[in-house]
Image 1 (cartoon, helix red, strand yellow):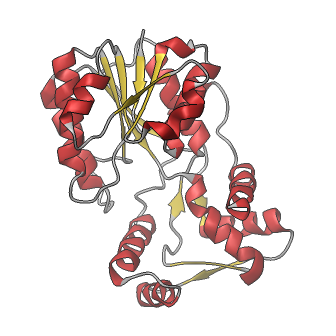
Image 2 (cartoon, rainbow, N blue to C red):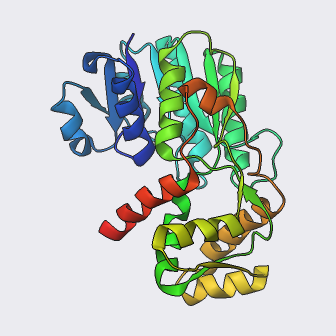
Length: 290
C-alpha cells in the first residue's frame, strides 16, 4: 500500500511520516509531498519518494496521486482559500481512485462554535459528497501551541489568558501523528469520525502549575477580560485582526469547545497520551533553541 502524506515539510506531516516508518511502513511505500520539495531532501535520502503538491495547483495534485492508495490531507492554513484548496485535493483523490482519504479536521467540527470550524465542516461535507472512502480525524489543540506562553513565563512568572476557567484536552503533535499513522496503516477505520485529544483536559491554573514545574519557579495564572487580553496582545505587537482571532479562541475555550477528553487517541496508539508537563518540557526546549 502506497501512502501519500501532504504538507510533509510541516511539523505535523513530518511527524506522521516518522510515525508511519516507526510502525513498520517501508520507506518505498511512503510518499512525502510539499510545495517545496527541497525541504524534504532528508526524507528522500532515506528512500522516501518526494513529490511536489500544492493545494492551489490541481496539476501538481493529480501528478502526485499517481499510484497512491491512501492519502493524508493535512488541513491548509490559508484563510479564505482553505476550502477551495481542500476541494482540489478531494476532487483529485476521487479521480485517482484513492482507496482511503484521511483528513485532519477540528474538534466537533460539525457542531462547534469554534472560530476555526466552518472551513473544516465544509471540507468534511465535501469529502462526504465526493464518495471517496474516508476517515475524519478531528484533532484537538496541539499542546505545543502553549510552549511560547510557558517559555515566556520563565521570566514573567505569569500565564495570562481570557479563557477563564475553560479547559483544553490538548495532545502533543507526536501523539496525534501516531494516531493518524495508525488510521492510515490499519484496515477497519473507513467511515469513522474520530475525536483525537489528550487523556486529560487541563485548566489554565493547571497550565501555570505545569509551567512552575518546567521552570522550577512559581508561575501563576492571571485571568483577563476580553478587553484586557486584546490590549495585552496588541502591546506585544499583534495587529488588531490577529489579536481578535486569539481572543475568539479564548472565548471558545471559555465556552468549553476544547474541553472534551476522548479516549480514542490513546486507544489507537496503545498507550496513554503524553502528559502536559512532559510535552511542554520538550516543546519549551525547542522554543529556547529557536
